[in-house]
Length: 275
Image 1 (tube, rainbow, N blue to C red):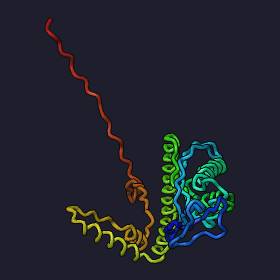
Image 2: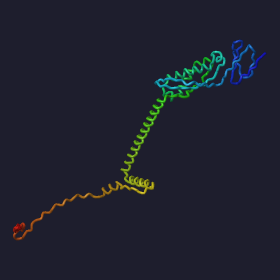
Image 3: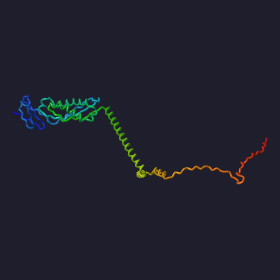
Image 4: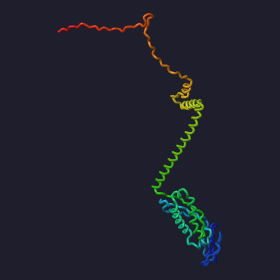
């Protein structure tokens, strides 16, 4: 009497005959087994996704984090996976958890947050080394999420805000520096060509008038004042000295002496007051 079994395309059949494993696994198709004598164990050859539970750990820079990951692996040798290890699925899970804890302790927080590719490769090598002896190949390892304490999140938020503020100030200062250089070049051009200042003034007036303002302030050009100052001749200030008045002279007797007026004092009679 025989027993018939079906092996699917993505499976391999490991046959134990009287407890001894057959050297060649059964491929996909119809498998004929001898009852009581043969026992069939199917091994899945597909890529298996194994989520790694979140692990609490302390990073190299003494920060408490909680990290979870996922492992992708497949069985390469069904005989070794069925014989050399009792449960390769559970074994890969335990190795992944210990490797994840080891990676957390060796890495800084910045590496966990920004350089995950390097950590994924390191964790893949750590898991693949023992898994190769079980006939299992680790396809890839991915760190899914890194959970931080609330205090650390607030600190990182303040740090990011300060960094943004610093970069904004640097950009503003750089803009002011470039603007000052351009203004200096424009000033040199206007100094050589005074008409450029007048054209710039007219352009400013046009821009102000385009805003439909009811009041238009037209500044008096400074260059026009300088032009008038240059074309106006400078006249020395003349101080008038008072002319001395000579006394009248007489052709015979000489200078005529005018006597000073004499003022005689008049004495009023005393008035008698009634008693």
